[in-house]
Length: 249
Image 1: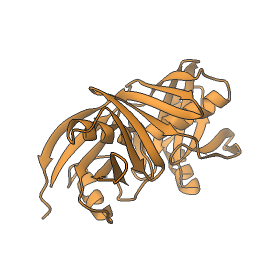
Image 2: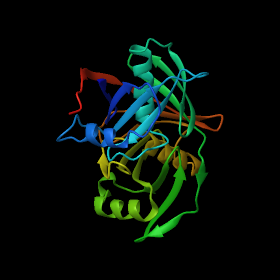
Image 3: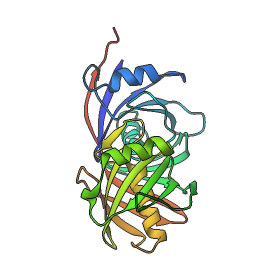
Image 4: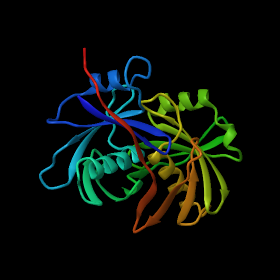
C-alpha cells in the first residue's frame, strides 16, 4: 500500500487513496502506532466522489472515526492537489459536511464551517468552561497562563464529557495561545485545528479578540483564523514528509 506521511502545524497524518468505503479502524490503529507502525495522530483515506473533488474517511490514532479534523483537512487538500493533480480550489466531503479548501504551494486555507452548537458555561474546580462543536465537540477554558494546562484534569474532563479539552490564553486582541488534549489520541497534541477554531470562536463572541487572529499551538507554529459570514476560516503551512510503501504482514 502506497502512503504519504503529512505534517500540518503540529499534527501528523498518514494519507492514501482508497478504492472503497469500509471499516478501516484496525488498519488505522496499526499504522498510527508510533512503535510498531508508521506513527501518526490520524489516518485519512481519500475516496472518489460523484459530485465533489473527493470525500474522506478520517480515523484517530486509536482507530476511532472522527467527523472532522482541521489540520487533517488541510493535509488532505494538499495531498489531493499535489498528488492527485486536482485544482487549487477544492471541495470535499467530511462527516461534518462539505469543506472548501484553497491551496497555494504549501499554504492551505479551509473553512471549518459554522459552529454546530454552544452549551451553557459550567464551573469545574473553580474554573469556567464552555463546550462548543466546531466539527467535533470541544471544551474551552480561558486561562491567564497557558502553562496552567493540567493534563490529568484535561483527561478527566475528556472522559466525563466525551470531548476534546482546550486551554486558551489571550495574549492580545490579535493573538491566542492554545493547548489541546485530543480525543482519539488520548493525550496532548502539538496542535488541533478544530480546537483552535473553538477557542477563537468563543473568544470572538466574548469580544476578547478581533475577527482575525494569530493562534499559536504547542508546536509554536502560527496559524491565521478569521470569522466571516458566520463561518470560521483558517490557514497555515502543510508539508508532505515522505512517501513509501507499507506491507501488511
